[in-house]
Length: 330
Image 1 (cartoon, rainbow, N blue to C red):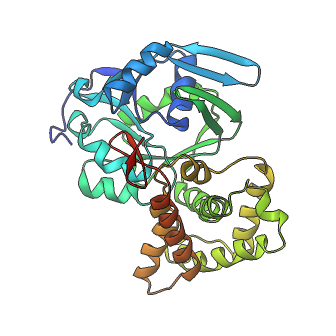
Image 2 (image 1 turned 135 degrees about the horizontal axis):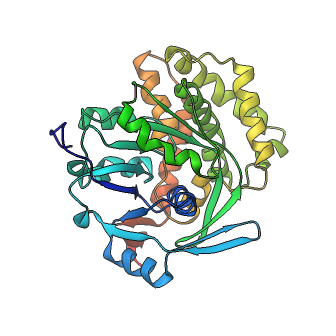
């Protein structure tokens, strides 16, 4: 990250690192509110693909629109970015930021919009001037095809920060409140992130392993018992992080999400089915690392983590943009 704390911030675009479903949803919402957006993509082939597409195809209910958008690779970045949204998967964050960090100053607004926990600590350790805004997004979105994003369900977008946000960064943030994403500020964002973590620690690995939709976890008599066992292990870990939730509240929270998203497939289910690396190390894996600090063992979460790692290795995995299955290139 740039050490020049007084570097003038000149570029007013919203730069979005990552073109997954949430990254494209954020890009589409900002574009439709009149903001200028630039996607930061990894490969030249991706630039060619989105150029051929003509932009992002955004769809919501009966509304369908093609949104022209700028796209570049990290080698084409301007000297200093004013606003950056990190929307790559958690395990990709540090590597992706290596190419971008030199284009940030202390005045830059950086928003972390991804599943899981642990990347904030990694970024603060690696780039000590970084004070990221944390996002908890519950909107449903998916891509039936690359650069075609469907806003499948309205949710909320909560933002917060572990440290105080500077006045310049607060001003840069205002445009997000003008989108249709129902953006709100939360002074206790950690509680909201932990609630989302608890839900994801239960729903994501269970649906990926069992190969089912979210609602199916409650359809089987053993489903609620599995959820309760996972939550029981997370309870002391959350309490050690000053998160005040009872076991009943945790279980009810997970069951409520299973009910309201009953027909959805979790992101981890989709990642496994499509041969992609999952975010398990920043969900149940994060719980395990935090449990070690308080000398607590979490066998259910450990088993789920190992099983997902096994499934990742058995399925196709993306390596440098090339798909491999059992060692054979596709």
